[in-house]
Amino acid sequence: MSDSLTQVASHQQEFVKPDGRKLTLYGLAPIQVTSGIPSPSPEAVDARPIMRWHPLRGEWVMYAAHRLGRTFLPPPEYNPLAPTSDPEHPTELPRGEYDLAVFENRFPSLTLTAPDPGEGPAQTRAGVGACEVVVFSQDARGRLCDLSNEQMELLLQVWADRTARLEGTGKIRSVLCFENRGVEVGVTLHHPHGQIYAYDHIPPVQARMLAQAQDYAQARGRPWLADFVAGERAADERVIHDDGAALSVVPPFARYTYETWVLPARAVSRLSELEPAERAAFARVLKDALLRLDGLFGVRMPYLLTVHQAPLDRPHPEFPLHVELYPYLRAPGRMKYLAGTEQGAGEFANDKFPEAAAGELRAVDVEGAARMKGEEA
Image (cartoon, rainbow, N blue to C red; front, side):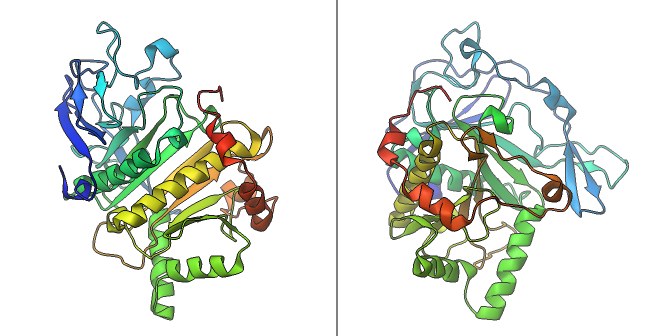
């Protein structure tokens, strides 16, 4: 059991798949595996990702041609994220008793062992990093918000544990845990799952967040997150749900109509820094926020969830740990598409004031949203 998982009662067990990829199972109770460890193929995919530098945007672009063959919206009987039911058609997961699973992505955009591609245009280099898949549940029809409070807390620990493990490779400077949900945002597998991308550099979004947070802390003598939480609580207009040690808000600068942030009340920079009571509150608020998005229009809200933690190159106490949720419906049946100003200039246009959006989310029947479990999206 790793250090980040010793804070509460939890269990894990590690395996190696037939194709050499690693699998880790996590549970609130001792892990019990009742079948062999499967893999959709006995041979590993020949992944040779590269990166090229975009000189005008100042950012790396990943190229991974082997991903063209990845699984795309398979029928339920060929769901690769469900536990294997037929040994003749192996999936990614074994049968047994466990809550969450993490395995190395079969079609990674980055790998820790990416070979040197040699010379090429635009500062071509190896695509060094890591890509993991996090399966939230064995229930193919479930949702992230269907996890119990304890399972949601376990997920926070798993994200922290994977961050620590990836940092321990000595090759990773930033880790992004995220979930895409809904075919509207390009999801290729409906089974409830997320991903982890680990980079050997600090990506532009995190780099800019860090620079802004550092400037604020230097000018004010305190972290931005502390002032933001205090200000939102005082304004009492955009807070959706306040659990004391954690809260959810529609930020006053929201770019998406029902954009929701989940934040700890105490300023910390990484999930591993949360105290047990803070982690439990954070888990409850995250579950509540997800339920409200589904209950808003009575359908499974397509969204992007991203977990923002400080870069790993050195301690960054000024960086604000938080989760950002980008819902892609701006009204019933109406998608939020990025327009010219948003994609071309990076300047977002929002049709609704955050204060109004927060009011609508506060009014959602959370218990009713919880009963949506198992319904079609």
